[in-house]
Amino acid sequence: MAKPFTAKEWEGIRSELRANPDAYGLPRREYGSVLLGSFNIRKLGDPRKRDAATWAFLADVCRRFDLLAVQEGLDDLRGITKLKEMMGPEFALAISDATGTLPGERGVAERLAFIYNWNRVRRGEVASDISYDRSALLNAQLAHHRDIGQAFDKYFAELERLERGERKTKPVFQAPAFFLSFIRTPYLVAFEVVGHPSSRTYRLMAINAHLIYGNSIDDRRQEFSALLRWIVARVAQGSAYYKNFVLLGDLNLKFDDEQRDRQAIAKELKALGKEVGDKVGVVFPFLDPHPSQTDVFRTNARLDQTFDQIGLFYLKKDLPRHLQGRKMGDDTRLGPDYGMFNFVQLFSQVVRRKPFAHKPSSQRTAEEKAFLARFEHKVSDHMPIWVRLPLFEAPLLGPPPQ
Image (cartoon, rainbow, N blue to C red):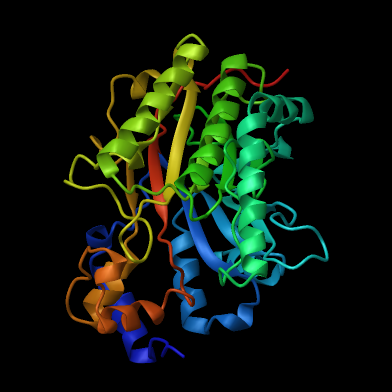
């Protein structure tokens, strides 16, 4: 079993972070801006699975955000409620029911949560799961019935091989199209960012998603594409409770060929825009390098993938004037800006006295793997990401609901 950080190491971590928060991407609180974040906190359930120092660290990080989407909350609510309580009395919680498995069946059920500072953010009246209706799924099955049939034939053929002892593991069904549902139902909640006396409010529908993690890149891309299509179509309709959306979560995007895969996503976004008449603007800042960097943020603890994403979806005609023509990352004080709290480098600098190198997992040394094992389960195997938006003189993003 991996050795947890010692009290002396935690003391060093806290001291280094207080002295150099910007070096590790921990966002500062700036009057006149709002911080939206996303954090997959690994298996956030039984509070006894984490020690007091780890809980204190997580609470210190999470209270930086005005609105934080948390993934991998388990059906055991004690973990997420403990985190919220440790963050302080000014924080509130909105959480989904368990998703990812049927009650009573084997498997890990997860909850998707929003923790928000109620001094800065108010809940709207809408909270809902996101799903495709039966007709849409049936139409997808009819449109791809030949490919689906072939996929089932291949799956059952591999099952027979398993029974004959010709393979050792149970095969995984590879769906040729999105024709069932999300592996974990995304969670949608309406929020209003209150702002300051000299500013007006942002009204937005926030979606928290933890998409499929599978061996097939096609499985991952199908869920991502289905969710994109749903959001873009809903924004284009202009009839949602609030008109503009933000997607926060662990989307499990995997870039085997980074340039090719990013271009494929950009092409898909452009095609969706044309379908709705170019009424909808879409920004996924973490798909590209920050203006201050040469590479994209690697959001997993092993620093080899950009699984976690934040996407902004808005009606172009409603884009606030103070955001028009602005590129994410140009204004690093009030925004619009984005970043990642790289606690892996923080831990490495204090515990190992050197940076944690960016390299494929297959090339990691035994010492590097042992270092990761000390916190991947206790803290998390994902790092928090964030977007900062300026508030001053922010016009309404759409009229209030009637």
